[in-house]
Length: 295
Image 1: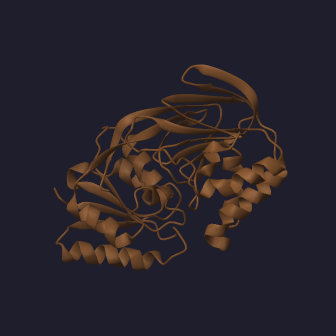
Image 2: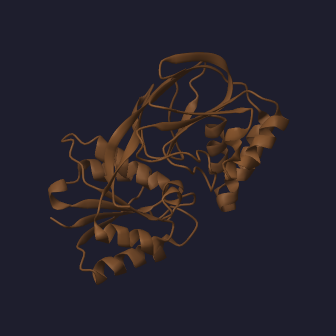
Image 3: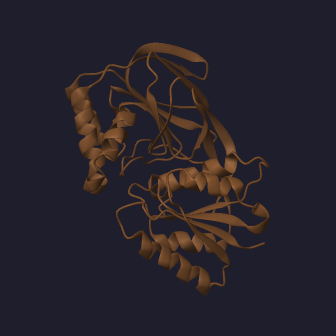
């Protein structure tokens, strides 16, 4: 069966997602691609759709949306009772589009043509075991200030992509104390942390080059650890996040690992692929060759 399940998030991004969806449909029809179109209607809807659909009817799942929509499709697929999987395609229509920016596939038409060519690429993913369940990530797993920034940014959606920058400044000024124990590949450290972010992709948020050395199929996560610092130090780190120069800053520790765990005194929320999902304590492991993507 060559039919594609086309999952579109009409609320994703600030650009006209309808135009991007219309382009996708047009190109599919032009290339005689059979598809079934379903619009998501609420948060988590794509998880349910992909988890329960009949994969005997579909050769792949294509999402039209952003990192959050891609994350829902991924989690729906990896929590299926029958454990079956098909390749996933993404046409970028979100605000951040961190995953597709890493692959230099931000142009919707180029992404659509990759889906039509149907040549899957196997990549790694991260398995996140939190206090309230198991989740999967293709992009990032963040804790601490990184998560608080996402929470504030969500309240500032009217500002578009700039909301991440403004939220970052707000949280740096707050400079909340976060005592925790961090375990990296069985090596344990207890300290006050600002934030901890694990990345499978180079970019997070709106153009932040958080993990400049990340490779999506190298069998490793890139871990960025910033311990508690003064506001002036954090403000000096922030501009460097956009070009990747922060990894050479004395306040930043950058390393690669296969597993890490966070044990915090509070059940701090997690940022998984730009969405606030789950909370600490958390165990994260790299799943090598975990999924096929049409990219």
